[in-house]
Structures are given as structure tokens and as C-alpha cells.
Length: 93
Image (cartoon, rainbow, N blue to C red):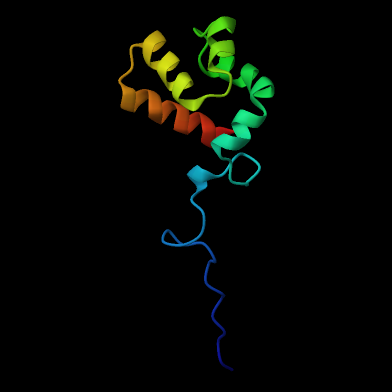
């Protein structure tokens, strides 16, 4: 009897979407989608960055660079650190 090899895993490190680019439901999330549902996202933004005021969040109004700027200013982050935090936030959505 000849042994049959199990099929190779469809997702290796070099192919397929990275888990960091998927939302919790397993679908890719991009910033356009976040902008489109910004009002729904404000609760998540407040949970992630509790020092941001309602006015700060209203000023951001779905603008990624504005959010990065607010995070940078409120938390004393570098531009790169703020960008990474926003990237991480986006990937969690």
C-alpha cells in the first residue's frame, strides 16, 4: 500500500494574506472602510486611546493622518510609533 501525503497547507509565510492584514472576522480591512464607518468606530477609538476627547475624535472624522497626529500629540509618540499604533488598530477592526 502506498502512503498518500497530506495536502500542503494552502497558506505559507510567502503566500496568502498575512494575518496582520485581516480583521477579526478574517476579511481584509482597509482605511477606506474605516473612513466609511467612522461614526461606528468612534467607540473603538475611545477604547484604544482613552485620552482622546470627543472633540479630538470629531476633528479626526475618519482621516488617518489626523488620527496619527492626535495619537502622536496626546501620547508623546514619534510619528513612526503613532503610525504603527494606527496600523495595529486598523488590523484589529
